[in-house]
Image (cartoon, rainbow, N blue to C red; front, side, top):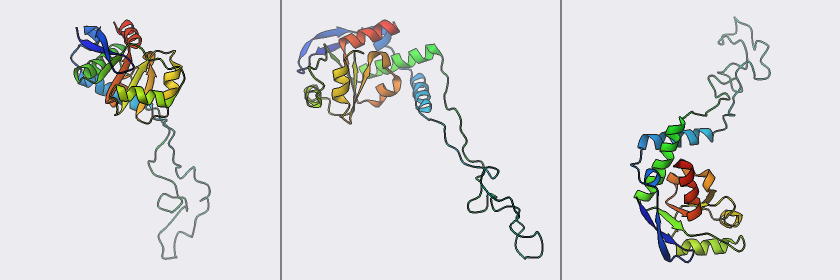
Length: 207
């Protein structure tokens, strides 16, 4: 069962946390994590791209010149694809990019991402994260004490609105509630900082 040091907001170690071995101590499954990231990135696409075909471009109903006798190539419409302002051949059309993944594979991917962060020593556990007011300056001070100067993912309790507001102006920090933990955010972060309550919630859901 993996153990992680428990820190307070001042950056001092105040104890240890025992993590669930079936969630934070498995061998990361590379393919499951890859498929989960692919699914999440695909679902972010709106799929509203659209170009007009020759039937949708306005105009072009009249034949530009007669078929024979001009010495020029025969043309039927000024909205044909070879004309400037004409229709687009095989252009993008609206589509749905959403992919599907089995529930067991989703859970395996999330457990693999969490275990990967523990293996790489990129996870820090806080006893609590409490801010009297949503001040960005206070959040920066806490992160500096925890030596989190790179891309950081903060996993907090769902009710911690002050932390959400205090960190939203920091470009390298993303705050998500424990209910919104996902593979893409975990793997994208260089350091994951989670409160003890958030980890307990994750263990309760995934165990």
